[in-house]
Image 1 (cartoon, helix red, strand yellow):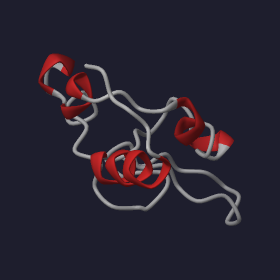
Image 2 (cartoon, one colour):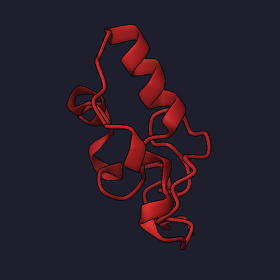
Image 3 (tube, rainbow, N blue to C red):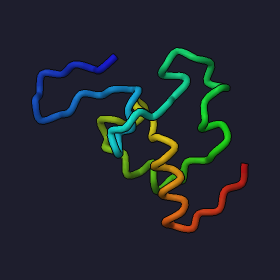
Image 4 (cartoon, one colour):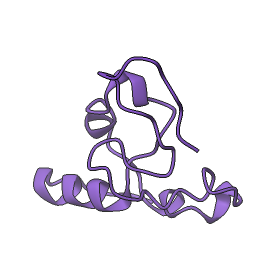
Length: 81
């Protein structure tokens, strides 16, 4: 499911991998499952973390839960779900 490109300097986009760490993101929607079953429905992704996603990956690959939880722990972000 990677997006092919002709520029070798631009990494391929895999919607099933986190654009920040490269690990599986466990995105239910990208895996063809109902989006209502995704882990992200129970955890808000902080905007500053979303802003770290490289432009070519934005709205094409989701951040993984581990990156979100690590960011929250390191930055003291309070969650209200």
